[in-house]
Amino acid sequence: MTHRALVLFDIDGTLVRRAGPHHREALVYGVRRVTGLETTTEGIPVQGMLDPDILTVMMRRAGAPRARIHSSMPEILRAAERYYLRECPVLRDKHCPGVAPLLERLTRRGILLGLVTGNLTRIGWRKLERAGLRDYFRFGAFGEMAKTRAGLAKIAIREARRRAWVERGAPVSLVGDAPADIVAARSNRIRSIAVATGLTSAAELEAEGPDILLPDLRALRLRMIEVV
Image 1 (cartoon, rainbow, N blue to C red):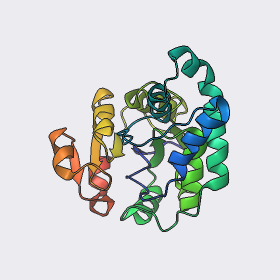
Image 2 (image 1 turned 120 degrees about the vertical axis):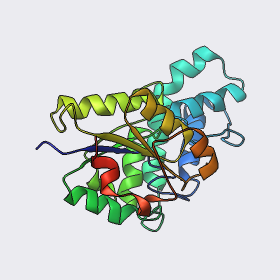
Image 3 (image 1 turned 45 degrees about the vertical axis):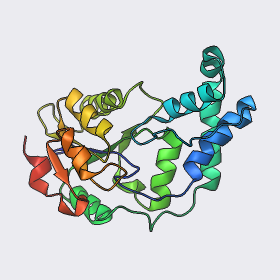
């Protein structure tokens, strides 16, 4: 089936928020389990960052040399994912405003939904499963798949076109709550839709020049994503 448009969503601060400490705890656990190092995410501006980048900063601050970070990273990622799969609570009451009705409306409209997120793959899918949102999304690009969020968006767009889920000229939008989402959209020449439901204020988002700025997803209209 070929869809009329593609909309890519960030997760944290865009689809769900206030999801608890379990994601951060998973990263700390992964480092400890593999290297024995005690680390923290405190003081790291994690919004918009990819999980491997957060882990790298955590380990550097703990004094780990670059070579050790590189060699241990694959095992750390797996350990963090396993922890999160065990510990993630039910998140059905953690939706950002308007999320479920919007996803239902877009799906009924025949619009393809995907993810572009800094979460590791199994963490991202688990988060959406526990939020009751997993079935709306067909595919995604996750934190370990590219070096930048722009790279993740490129992977997602290319995958959708390769599988003929959308035609090359179909409109593509990236919805997110952080400046990094706006930059990623601009880098891929797709529509950026910023929502002020995360940690970044509406004024800060506006300064980045998104194509569309919304207070939350209740304000998103179909015409915003269907027009080329």
